[in-house]
Length: 304
Ligand code: DON
Image 1 (cartoon, helix red, strand yellow):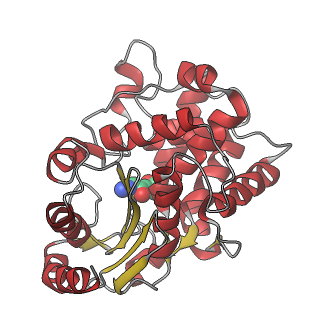
Image 2 (image 1 turned 30 degrees about the vertical axis):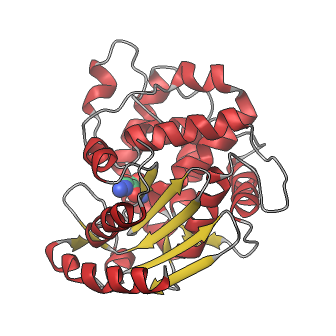
């Protein structure tokens, strides 16, 4: 396994040249375009890593899977999906257009920005600070990493430039999808995107889902039903408008972020964290996806 991942990381680094590092806020474009790293953690307790696996980066959209778990724990499945759908959009992650044109006015799914902002509004707490603190504490439990925290420079950048997200938040409020305070929901969302992680953090969250919501000490933090919902939405919507193609080529529930991370779950087998900040036109790590494809082929990972 170690030889295999060393070889595959080397082979896929050149794909980074074809993509671009996110630059919608200044801090993100400081990433080294040619970085590529992977961390794999298996159900039988083995860890493998290669390349730039130690580099810190912000979790961005991958946070959407963890906030979804907590929102369902806080409100129940029925309420959550009365406000957010379960269908892929085929549109970019920050697209607004279907919000108004769909009959229900619900965001299509929790993996696009509009859906994730609605989900952030459902996290319980007395104010934005308390809500985010609950979410961060939950993140720490799921990833079994007590050191997780926000990168405040990125958070400030997200908040200062997040006008499109703000527009969607206020639209959702006008439609009654967001019931509470919009600015609080946005603040939770901007902060959750700015949590700093490594490939190991992502692999551990993947492992948690591969175990259907159990920590390594055997604590069942979320019901297996919630784990199934999250994994299903990852495979259908987690890689945005590349989700179908990646389901065919890789075949495991995965979620990407514009920080360059990809988190994959191989049910009953392993969690995988990948980092490669050079992105394709849809916002997915370009070398990361190619690495994942190779790995899936070599290890026969597809669930289909
Ligand atoms: O809200 C945004 O647009 C970013 N903070 C996160 C988007 C993201 O990671 C989409 N991923 N591919």
